[in-house]
Length: 429
Image (cartoon, rainbow, N blue to C red; front, side, top):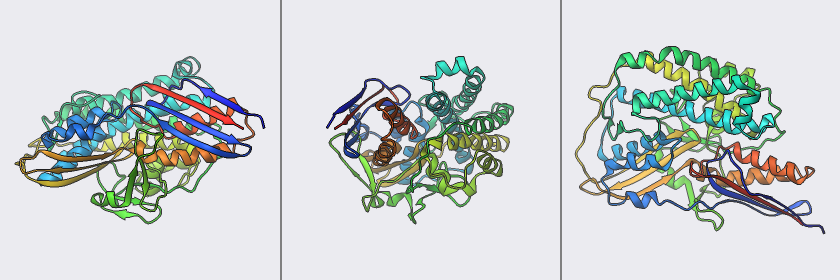
């Protein structure tokens, strides 16, 4: 029996260091591992013994692309432990800066990292040569997201104006109002990009996913909600550890998360969309229909469309918040230190980001647990890869390698948001 080996030594367009190993014997998969070998950075250990109010600033350094997700989840957990109730104005401003993160992160992935797979191009530089208007629009949209984060957070990467209880300073109303024309443009540009991407040739693939996300009866969830699924899961964020189990596997430095029954699940845009489609504005639902999407999308390769619909939503939501903006006064709610336990969970661009902290009497962190989206998606990524490989055995090695790369990129895995490296080896016996 002939043995075939495919080796991919470098893959850009993912964040972090990982590898994929697949061994085939005939028409069966003998071994498949999505390996994350980037060294662990031990943020939970770094938090122990520090003042709880340091948690947002420290955890924002976990990710340079989605720092707001960590700031907000950490802030929520500490605020619950300290008994802080933020004002509606602070909540609205937090939702506004989070919209900026969704815009810049989704556009970066969809237009620069994922679109090349469908255009037959190696990277965004080649897209700029072939489709310059697409790249100009994408860069302008990303700048819009960055501008929101800079105006509210002080800077686009690792914001310095956010804190437990709110903000150090609220932006002036006239500066927020100045964003309105660009947000109006952004909503239209995101819609046009979603419809343009809908003309891509998508692989014929689908799965019956367990979709886990925040759910909120009043709005498309970003900051708050219960944790729900399309399989009947409905829990408060404090019950997360009872419903989700983490375990160490030999081939990954990131923990794998499963439901309590051992099943994999999906978080991120497809899961949010499936669980909260009816909370999207009608304009976004109309874009989805014109892009060929129903209320639930089961083809992971079409996640690029859902991401752009969420960009349209984030622009519209930011527009609504900007038009109704009232500067919070005070900009921060203070509380004395105390012992307690707190939980925070928000929707990062890639899915739910859950934090839980225990504080002692003087407000020092005794323990911390952080569950990011990509660790939750790892088992489902492996399940997707197994399905894709078995459905693509007629492809030659190079085409199969590309299909596996594309399947991984549908999740926009944020392994570390640092080095871009993926090594793929396929043994065919």
